[in-house]
Image 1 (cartoon, rainbow, N blue to C red):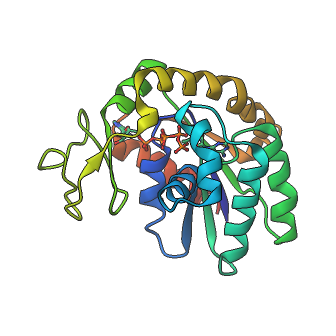
Image 2 (tube, rainbow, N blue to C red):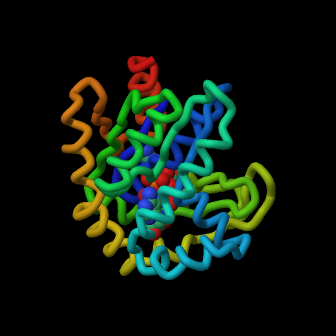
Length: 217
Ligand code: AP5
């Protein structure tokens, strides 16, 4: 199966993807995580992406598509894929179809997580991420037991640079202009798209996401 998690910054895509990807046979492909990893490793892709990410802008489609094609080609056959933060523009969505077709695959489900802007801003201001294992926390809604330290691996937690207030506002604008139109694009195939209210407790969002995936399988 190929599932796309679509939705604005801070709606909970990464949180839900991490839960789903614990199931055997699933791979979580987050283009944001892959780009941050490229930056940490100081690769050419990381250097090219840095200025766009820090400004809250999208990284050019060609770079993203090369990255996704490379990652898909490395997957064992039959592995389920959970895209998080990809596709994010119409050209990315239009390119994904033929890429999957060449692998005899298709998009099986698009889960759209939705929440009002004020909720997104509060979540992003409170988000902290573990630099060691990647676990996501929130100082308002899901704090670690010890401030600033990951419960799971003991590494220090960080606040993403692009979660600063002015950059968050830019990211929300970019989402409305460039990514939200994908909802209409996928609505063209009605059985594909499921809308999920992201502004509810995490376990309820989780149940709705699981239901959406199981219904498609
Ligand atoms: P990316 O990393 O993809 O960021 P994003 O889409 O902006 O999404 P976020 O990671 O901010 O939010 P999320 O929905 O995953 O929320 P989370 O689960 O963490 O992209 C970053 C940048 O990379 C982009 O700006 C762009 O430059 C570039 N990029 C990436 N992909 C690209 C592409 N395809 N094309 C071009 N450029 C690309 O949750 C947020 C917080 O809320 C957490 O603290 C969490 O604990 C909390 N939370 C989650 N759910 C709940 C809940 N139900 N109740 C209370 N709190 C909750």
